[in-house]
Amino acid sequence: MTLQQNILTEQEYIAATDKPEVIEIEAENDKDNLRIAAVNFLVATSADNYVKVYYLENDQVKIAVLRTTLKKLEANAAAFTHFFRCHRTAVVNIAAVQTVS
Image 1 (cartoon, rainbow, N blue to C red):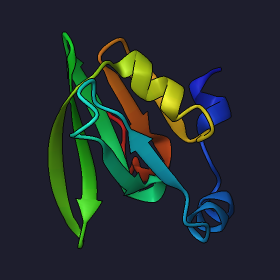
Image 2: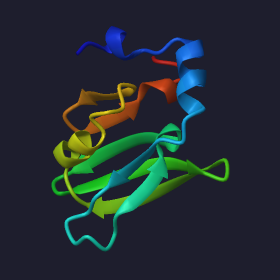
Image 3: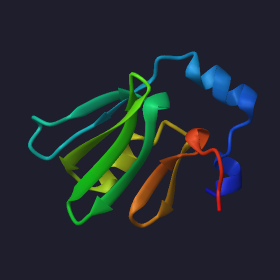
Image 4: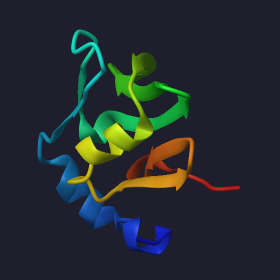
């Protein structure tokens, strides 16, 4: 899937945000699972078996560190077409991207 195929129009994004879709990111220990609205997911970056998840909560960016892999996160997020693996160490929410440099 290419980046162009993942970019949503503004109308598609608004339609997608009307649904309360939730992504659950499962940690290996099953205690630190993270459940957030898909529209609040910004980006996830990885280093070895840890993933830093950046998301919005009450209009502030929060960071959660989970013991999991991007591959597992990607599998959990397969239903969300606006999530894009742009690098081997990052998955982004294309709908949240404002500029690219």
